[in-house]
Structure formats: C-alpha cells, structure tokens
Image (cartoon, rainbow over all chains, first blue to last red; front, side, top):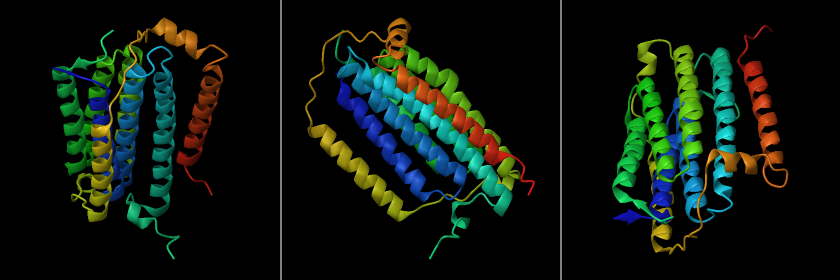
Amino acid sequence: MHVGVGAFLMLGAVLFSLGIYGALSKRATVQVLMSLELMAIAININLIALARFQTPRTMDGLFFALFTMVDSAAEVGLGLALMLAIFRRTDSSEVTTLDELKG
Amino acid sequence: MPDTVSSIAFGLFATLCVGGAIGMLVSKNVVHAAFWLLEVSVATAGIFFLLHADYVALVQLLVYSVAVAVLMLFTIMITLRRIEDAIRPRDFSAIAAVVGLVFGGMMLFLLSRYTWHPKSAVFAADIASIGRQLFSLRLWALPFEIASVLLTAALVGAVWWAREDDR
C-alpha cells in the first residue's frame, strides 16, 4: 500500500483545522500561540509534499517551507515577548483581559 | 523515483501528528501542551524524512522544534509561575468547533475529489543543490537576505518588548 500527495495534504488540512479550533477556543495566550504554531506546521507539511510530488525539479515548495519556518520562528519570538509585556502591564496571561478596545 | 510513499510509515507519523495535536488541545496542564507541541513537531520532521526532504527535516528537528519548545516553556515559567495557574480548565467554544469542522470538512471533501498528476522527475533535495539554489541570485538569494533582515528585526523587537519597563 502506498499513498501519494493527497494523503499528505489531508494530514495538513486536519492539523490546520485542529489549529484553527485551538486558536479560536483557548483563553491562555500561550496556548493560542501554540495553536498558531500547529497551523504553521500544517502549512509546512503541505509545502514540502507539493515540492516533493508536484515540482520535484525546482523544489519551490521546499524553499517556501524554509522561509515559512523563519517567519514562524520570528512570529513566535515576537508573540512571546509581547505576551511578557502584556503580563507585566496587566498581570494576566488570558486573552480575554485584552478587551480595552471593545466598543 | 516513485511518486508514492509507504502507507504504513505515513500512517504511523500521521497518527503521531494528529494524536499529538489532539493531546495538545485537550491537556489541562499548559506545560504538557507545550510538550505535546514538541511531539507534533518531531513527528512532522518524520513526515519530512518520508518525503525525502532530509535537510528541512533536520532544520525542523534541530532548530525549529527545540527553539519553539524552549521559548514556550520559558514563557510559561515566567508568566504562569504557580502550578494552579498552569493547570487550566479545558476551554471549549462551539463557534470555534464549527469553524474548524467546516474548514476541515470542506478541505477533506475537495482534496478527496481532486485527482493529482505527480511529476516523475527526480526530487534531489540534497544540501548541495539546496545551497546552490538558495544562493543563486536568480532564484532565492534576495528572499534569503530579506529573511535574515526579518529575523534581526524580530530579535531586536522581541528584546525591546520584553525588557523591564523603566518608565
């Protein structure tokens, strides 16, 4: 039994939907960031699978995945620093306390 | 080069990925959730090895998963100091579940209906050819430099945000 590109894209879709659920439902900021990382991982699986099966010669998806990794490393660093700054100011690590702009 | 991979290995790593993601979402302890995320990341590196992308798999293992896990654990240690803070009720949101299910169902439905036509060229993702393409001016050299500027800016910004407030 063998699987092709479709199975990898389905795995990416499942992981991405789990990430969407976590990012929308969690209340702790660090858990929201973890869910965002899960979504980034799902995207990387898609990119590498497409590079392997659809553009094997130029490997475009592989380079996209490398740059996505750089991006999400920067994102998680900034997100965690922002979380520390918010924690210093409000003494809370919940997303729900950040409602100053609520109308 | 065959255009498929063994379904046993794929099933193993896919189960590890999805199971770890579910474990991350349902674990009550935030520290456990961080370790589940590390497990998902390592299983993803396994998926990359299956796809013959050895270099990306090593980057994922050595740089990405460990760095992200260490950052997450440090933040948890700093912001959720007491054990009562780190153990949280299981958050549930019906709207989030609906959004996730609709998106996932839609993607799975569309992917199951699509027929793929894989190219059968050789996928030579060895470090030498990756390096040649990454540093060739015509292809990825400019994005590479922009990525390094982005990382530097993010590093400086993170230090700026996380410093002690002296105002």
